[in-house]
Length: 494
Ligand code: ASP
Image (cartoon, rainbow, N blue to C red; front, side, top):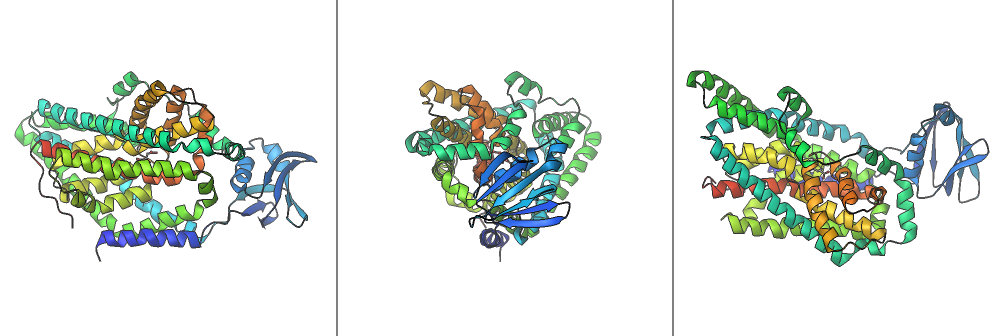
């Protein structure tokens, strides 16, 4: 059986396994100084200090209960908090000296470390792979002008796809109006449940300044850039190193280029070996996500989720094929078929950075993109080109605005196009950052940033979905640029 078939089967089995061993949303493990007690199917849970009630939660507030307890920072208060659990029968139970409150884990969650190892191994490879292959690639590009030309085309293409993606998102949100149908009661419940999470993200105080962003592309210390996994800085350093290697004496340059060529080949081989464990890793990642995910929240946010997923589907299956047809002669079906592994890894890891080594391998081996183009276009795209994230940010901003009763006019929607494009550029290629950068988009149109609490509950699942077009767009750019340079080889979909 081919590896991608195994991965797809693992994905489906993982989803089934995760839903069979899903975490009970009406069960909590409470660790006290006297041991563990498990409560379930409560009618309400009250946090008490003495006899005064600090907070009351109802039957469907499992995440709220955990978050409230964790949010109490005052050690003394925490020690004195007790809870009263009231059951549908009217009976109640008191629990005190609480040390920890958590969900009751299942086997699906206990298997997740295997998936985490897979993500860490791919992430481990990404930096040495990008550095070495780009140094070799840049050394083979004849001159700076050539690199500038490819760079210009790449950024132009990325800007084009991002603007179209955001427009798709806005049109979907304008037509479906997902926020108009949210009952006030659901809004209040979501705001309350995810208030602390939202606050934590807002406090990170993200901002975006173009000049600072451009300046920060130049690393002060390339080793720090590598340690931090800052791809833009690594790209900058690697290109300069490659170019100047090609301008020094051949015998000196050759040893260095051979060295990096060796590192790059070893890393690529390592990616291929790591992919052997991909089916099992994908299984554990998907099953843990499904098991941990509270599907009841999906009902509350169904229309919003459908709007984002529909937008992402149009982006992936309409915009990308059209661009592929417009700019290349590549067969659309084969293009997608060749990328099954990339799609599965992006979906299950939610990380463009972890997927990068796989994307690079597939682009070079299956899509016929020469190394000197792939090694440049892909790391750049991983960092700045996030169409899926940009589209998601546009829909999310519109949704939150609609829930709060703001009617965003055309000029405000154009502001969203601009800020979402920039916010996506500033989004790090790792899970969940798109949501934090959304705050910038909300601020730009005056929508309350606390509104991110409304959508946090489904972010994990949407993150998986938006990471897929994020990485496909990078491969697409590689194919388009290589084709425009007349350097695209044969595509092999097998
Ligand atoms: N998870 C996304 C990626 O790695 C980024 C995001 O949208 O949060 O591409």
